[in-house]
Amino acid sequence: MWLTIALTLISTTVGTPAVEKRASRTSAPAGCLSVQAGATTSGWYQTISAALASLSGTGSACIFIYPGTYNEQITITYGGPLTIYGSTTDSGTYKSNTVNINHTISSPEAGNLDASSTLQVKSSNFRLYNVNVVNGYGQGAQAVALTANGDKQGYYGCKFDGYQDTLYAKAGYQYYSNCYIAGATDYIFGNAAAWFGECTIASKAGGAITANSRETATDPAWYVIDHSTITSVSGASLSKNVYLGRPWRVLARVIYQYSTLTGVVAPAGWTTLAADATPIFEEYSNTGDGSDTGSRVTETVATSAVTKSQLWPNGYSWIDTSY
View 1: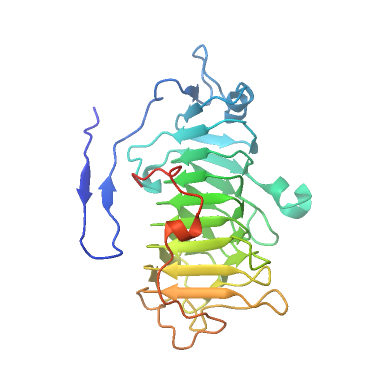
View 2: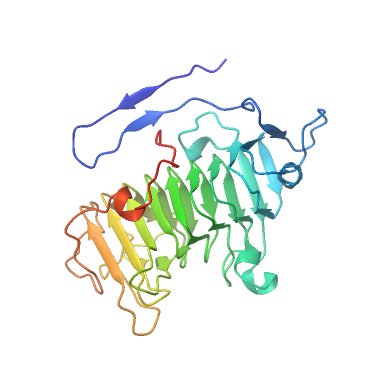
């Protein structure tokens, strides 16, 4: 029997988030479809794709995935609110995840970035908990693990692993909490209004982390990386060899705030991509060996942190506030 522990440590220091150990989730919540590789139980599904195909209408739905590696390429287009849970002994972190969705194909092979995605989510009002998503292509071409292309999408305790273009935060309001994101080149990219909170962002080789594609002054696209850790994957030696971002489009907008920037971060901080770009690249109240902004280039001085209300002026009641 699992002992459920709810421990919340709250600091009065401004900008310090609450830390909470959450309970295990190892069986399907009431009303959820169940997925298990090789399942023989009546009403259960052997693949995630089969469970998704069974959904119809626009009502709220949920799917629970039992431990295993699911070698699938998945596109989600469900018309109503949808939550997918992966089995875990600690729902508050990616570290205890037991569900893996794996696929290997590059963008040139697939025809475009979206088509290379291991998981492509086109639905709005979508939540994913405690699932690892991997594109195993590796070095040599763009190859997407997740394309998030819908409004009010939330990803909680998930792991996204690739090399170039791992996480395509393409469009809409998006929230990533307590996630692990790994890659080497432009591995968080796109045009979403996305908040990355308490995430570990780990580079596999030298290169830029973000490639934001904001193009106009009225475009709400913004990457806010908050209370996160910028580091390298285990075994990689990348001292001063990682850039916080480069502009995929001319008005790219990114801020790192209240985060730990380790020694992997290059003194220049930011680098170039789009011709004649005038990006808004900001840093605010960060710590760590890579946080000194004295030698930064193409940086806009931030006078305050960005809030969720600034990022999402239409509201954010859709996020799971327990994260």
